[in-house]
Amino acid sequence: MAEETFTPDPPPTLDEHARVERLSEEELELIDTALLSNASYRWQKVEMVVVMTMENCASQIPSVPDLFYGQRGAHAGSKWSTLIGGQFEFYAL
Image 1 (cartoon, rainbow, N blue to C red):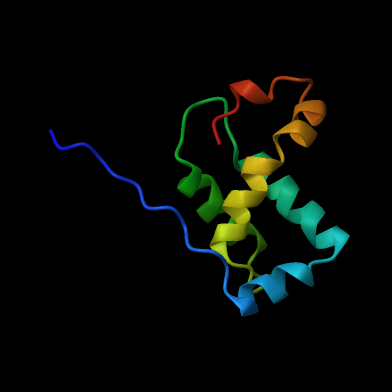
Image 2 (cartoon, rainbow, N blue to C red; image 1 turned 135 degrees about the vertical axis):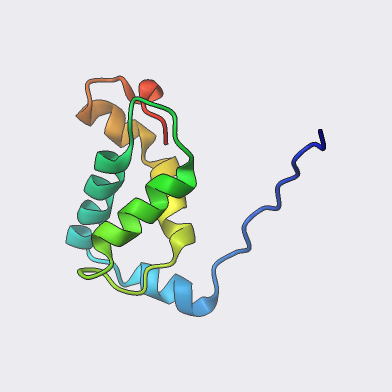
């Protein structure tokens, strides 16, 4: 069986970066809530959590790049750990 190789995501474009910079605190909270609600105690790929979150948020927060959702989820662990009683390591994101 061939070993899988991964290519790092490219950096955001200037337009993507500008869109993310314009997100309000309320929009970030909506994204965080959706990411957390789509995470699960059972294992699932990050891509699945990102896609479900994008679908949840697309009508209210258009044009946010998918890369942002993945990065937001990866870096929000410490905040979520408090929200879910310190058990973030058991969530599959």
